[in-house]
Image (cartoon, rainbow, N blue to C red; front, top):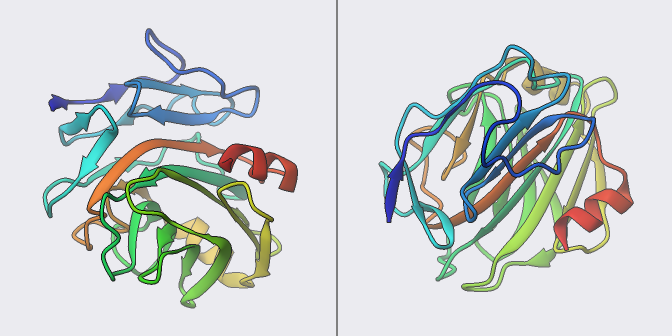
Length: 222
């Protein structure tokens, strides 16, 4: 394992993973140790982990209370609408609901994330309101899964997709605008700082500052 202190200035740099397109956002590929920030929401927005990031061949390892990190949001974060895409796995599926990554307000008051439910189901979550939107897919022990959650503040619409299956939709009302206004950071390795640690590997995280179409969400999570 290597300890990596990641500090990225806005725009692309050496070793960036690319693939962000005109929409911008960010792409953290921990498995390949490639990182990119680009697009209209990144012009003045450093992407920085202030805590060393522990990497393995499978990516970011979140295996203990201390091994999760936060990343401050910048102007690349679109509070009107966006899609978070996560790729992660756990060697053992413990009977606890755990999240590899999510947006939050520095606490549990406002948050949105993809997570593996205690039964194995890959779901999206939002708070305030304690909203759950289930995908149709379950995680498998020691196999990477991809999941995406897309939120639109103006309408309250939410979409979730996992493992390339059908996109699931719901409306969480004004709670979506509330959480997207309040969130200040991304947490990797747990849903919120100090929360239950994922206990597995986070291989890749992507954020796109718009809501992907159903076709795009399916393609991004296959």
